[in-house]
Every structure is written in structure tokens, then in C-alpha cells.
Length: 305
Image 1 (cartoon, rainbow, N blue to C red):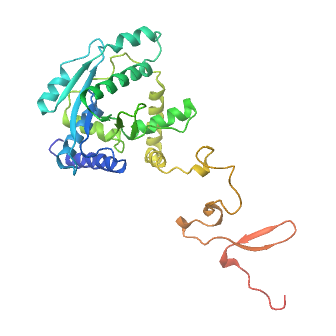
Image 2: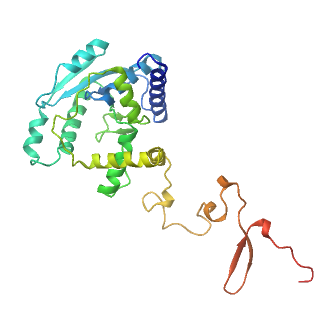
Image 3: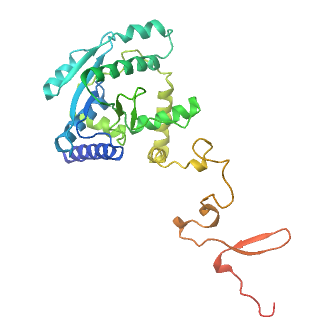
């Protein structure tokens, strides 16, 4: 597939979607030095390839340094990524930090390890970025990761919260970016297979089938099979929030609402332009009844009535 028209269309689509996300959220600016976090999975390989391609034709100058965190998982193939980085000629660093033993020590047997592992990994990445003079940190999360995180927070955290394409670290020292935010996981998987990346499987911690994220992923896959496009709709909704129609008093001043101030969309009650229908109009009222009718049904006044 790598030399086929389908491959070039897929590659163009991924680069275009990443370029749009970078533009929409102003992820990359002139003079940035970007630490590209590489796990050895399909997402991070694709992210690095896309960023290297965009770097060649971007209107701004920015640097890239690839970084892999060797967490000392037993069986981790530590030679794979250095060999790949050298084969494509990208600057890189391998950072060694034995977070695996910490996780095993702190997390009881049978419990999921991802939360603690993620926090430890994040701390090491931030310190590495500071040491290397990188002001941006690029992570390989994609559209599906963002939607899954939204439902995880909704179902299990009681929050309307997802995974932002861009955010500042707590200390304000770095900005985290997700260039693949608009890219579908299925496209990334197809691209990675065509590119024949030396994938390092994410099963070094053992199988954790009880992870809530896996359950949400399975739910979304089922939805997509039953109603194609539903995940796209959810993703678009994350960028089209209407605070006045939710319940967060910090986002919308419900207490301050008064007659003459509210701007309520009454289309669902009195006509909807998407159906090209005329709005219902007031006809008349009596003691216990008020009637609205279609304009075409308006009855002419009877002379002398």
C-alpha cells in the first residue's frame, strides 16, 4: 500500500488534519523546540512522521527532538527506538527512569497501574523538557482518545471534561500539544501498518482487561458499527458547547437571567430553518385554550364578525 494512491491520500489526510489542529489551537510557533514523546506505539510513530513532514514546509521554524522514556519494564526492547531514530536522522534522547518498580511496589496486585504510571511518566517528561530546553511537549493522543476520555470523565468522574488539544503544565513552564487531535485511530492504524513501523506492544504491564477505558472503547466501537458517524458527532460536540443549556453556574449566569436578557433558541418550538418550514403563529385564545397555527391555515376574517 505504501506506494499506492490510497496511501498517499491517507498520508495527505493525516498531515492535513494535524496541520489544521496545529493552526486552530496555535500549537506551534516560530522558534519552538518540541519534545516529541515516543512510546513505540502506532500513534507516536505517526505523530513524529507527520511533524517531520510539516516541519519541512511550515511557515515557521521549529525544532524537534524525539524522546523515549525507558521505564525499565521487564522485556522492554530498548534497542528498537534508538535504531529507528538513527535510521531517519532525527535528534533524540532515551531517558531511563525505573518507574516500573515504583508502580509494582505501590499498586496492589490485580489493580490497574495506568494512573500511577502515567503520573510518574508525566513528571519525568516535564523534567526532561526543562533539561533539553523544550518549551512544547507533543503527545500522540488522537480523536478517539479524546472522545474516550470524555466518556470516562462523564461516566466515572461526574465531569464534562475531555482531553484538550493544548494545555499549559501546572507550573506554566511548558505547553502540551496533541497534533493528532483531529485524526481517527483507524486511519493512524492503517498508516502505521503501511509504514511498517517497529511497533513496541503496550502489554508490558500484563493484560488489564478490566480497565474502564477498554470498556468505553468497546462501547464506542459498538456505537460506530450500529450508527456510523456517531463518534464524529460526539467529537464535534466538544467544540460546540452551549453553556446556557447546561447546568454549570460558573460558566453561565443563571441567577442573573431576567426578562429581556435571555437569548433562547425557540426554533424547536416555532419552526426550524433546517426543515425550511414557516414558524407557527398566534391565532387566538379563550379562557382555557391558546392556539398557534401554520400561516397557511390562518382563517380570513368574516365580514361583520
